Image (cartoon, rainbow, N blue to C red; front, top):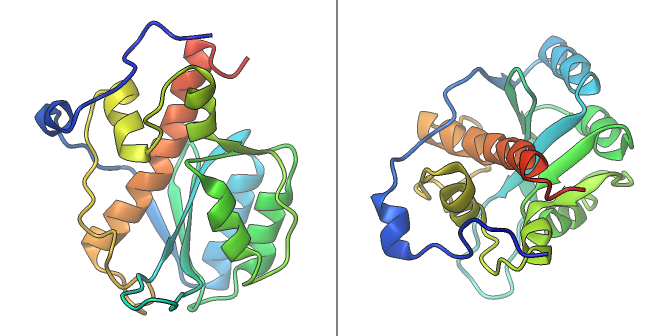
Length: 197
């Protein structure tokens, strides 16, 4: 089945779009009580946006484990800094819960890397890129999807910054929160379009 909307978006068309960032509540999880509040909110969701950030590598053969996990609910985006607080039980619970849809763009690699940090069995994971590909759309990156389906542009600014820093900059926080929020927004939009039937 091919959808009637845009099949592609050019770099020029993308640049013309207004930039949007997530502007809702962002909760940086730094204490056990914040972790408990996040866990409670996530448990009551039917769908969450999911993403991770990893410190970039600049040398061949070098690799790093994920530093940050982002989860977007209807009320907030939660940022879990993996080196700052042990969030593994709460994250494993969320990612293994079959009642919650985890929507992400190419989440398989993120989940594989995350499983080397703590054990869990991912359940009910939805790859938004695979969804659009089934509908004949070749461009499946998060920025292209936001432009084509949500009508705005998200910036790449902080993508290659050091995500392992103990204190994240305001631009890193906004960038990370936006990626998870976009995944949830795309899921809701695809649901309206009938892409998920």
